[in-house]
Image 1 (cartoon, rainbow, N blue to C red):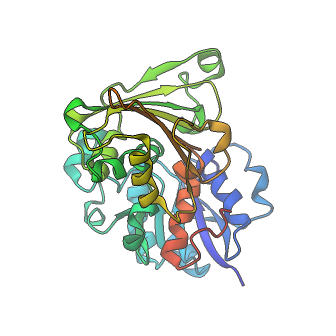
Image 2 (image 1 turned 90 degrees about the vertical axis):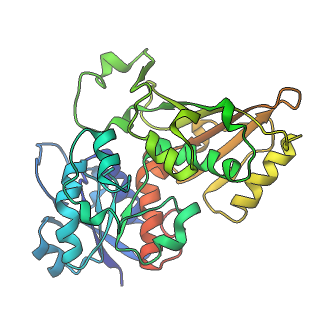
Length: 335
């Protein structure tokens, strides 16, 4: 018998992607929860008659929801997470409400006060490949952002192994499809603004930067990040530039670091040195594909990291985290 899990924000892109994953999950079934600002928009086609209820503490209890996904704006997540937890359900938050650890950090990058500070210490930020032990059994998961997921999976093992000359800096050139901006209409993401165009945004102050800094243990001065919007619906490709340390003499040295970190990981795929992934290899999946090229004369290195921003960058990773929280096989519903 399948157990019920809730989805708040199911009309958005990440929420719709959650429905797609959970309807094929072997152990759970989705219950759609209406919160606020219900717009006159059609439900995702693949809801297949899923039960829809008002999102209240009573409905969480009466339906026996074991977990609730919040595919909601940050303020809504801060509002709902406390009482959903009190109602007895786990929370997997796809917003940034609980990612940054402190109220000060949140205020700096999101320019607003945090309204549920008590939960910041409890929340577990989880890229499963790095944090699965903490995620198992957690009550509140802060699901990582899409850009930091691709960046941390590419950078963190190399930083930990001392493979990067940090004094020369790391440059991350990140490109994303338009769905990363969410479904709410805006001029910036309208068809006429996006099509046949290519634009950079949030230069030097993108909100996802602190997630990279705190998880790869970098100083802000060591990491430069630029997000760019490309005229496709989904997918993230990050091109990361740095100079390798003197202890790296060949591409095989770098590959060995990645292999040690990701051996047996079901959702990270490594390419042979000199080969790099593209978006077609990852879209509509929960994979992160990583490839690189290394110049032994100059030690210049370019790493390419690709994910689906709605998959490994949002809903797919959220399901992966739910599997850890609820004790299921980590790949359930994802492969």
